Image (cartoon, rainbow, N blue to C red):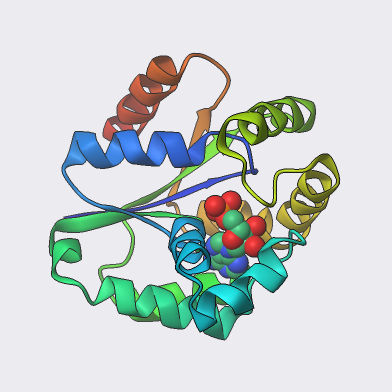
Length: 188
Ligand code: AMP
């Protein structure tokens, strides 16, 4: 059973890579950002609440996010394993995840490494294609700041636990996927 977390700054390509790893390992990807966007598109109460944070590039409060994730993790398709994309986003969420998973815990945490200037360009390119409500330049810069302050400390958190698998995220999509699969098998 494989239980992975993918980390990386916004624009590092972790969503794309998570989908490919999910296909490779035959397990589902759980993206909290995608779950929020589904709620926003459907106009649910949770979606409206989430939008008021997401559209400003801020994190949705932990209790809302964790509740939504717990529901998703109770569905039968995660029994064979899963890839978490976008959760945890801060140290508090990481502690909740540790508690939820119990003794066996995560298999590995992949950190997609990329430089700050590269991510802004990637995100602006994605904005033009996907039309996400949080992909304007100002909001992108704010999301990067939130990432550095709240999410980046998770890299040390997981390194200290011997779970971190760093992967260079610069290159062709296929190349990065191959690199990730190799790094995970090296990590055993
Ligand atoms: P993403 O698709 O992962 O880039 O997420 C888009 C937005 O959804 C983020 O900028 C946050 O506002 C929100 N979000 C996604 N995952 C989380 C989380 N684990 N905790 C809080 N907010 C989240």
